[in-house]
Length: 166
Image (cartoon, rainbow, N blue to C red; front, side, top):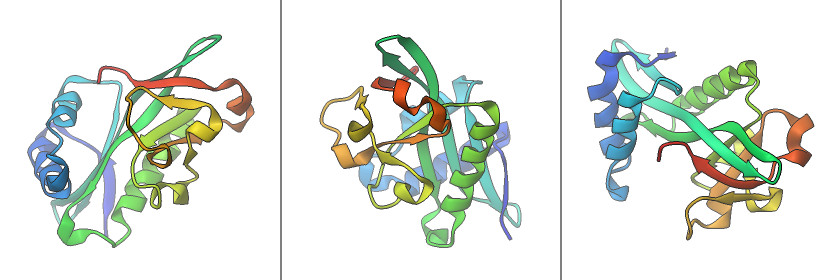
């Protein structure tokens, strides 16, 4: 049984350890760890079982620069599960819980830079095919994705998406 709950200050060390293990081949996630400590406008959830943290997800503000002006959305900035507990649905549960919370707030879209075969299960689509441009050059098109949480705004949302503060 895994419980999904908001991150608490005392979780930061365990989250950093999970990120270091899950993203070791990518050089870790120190910039996100620092970001999580400094921001209050994020959604940071953890998966816990038996008093132990098994994973976490971070959603952070994104600004989409459209021809009609900026539109605020969110980015799925980080999803990590302790390697010993991967492939058990924990990442899916964390992502779905966070996306449900964002839908409730009226957030129009979420972007992610991630595995092209993983994120489409949540409804993410290739950003470039939807008029979204990543703030960073060199990101493969199939790794930069968007999920429209408000389908009625799909036609007005296009432009350069940038993580606010990163």
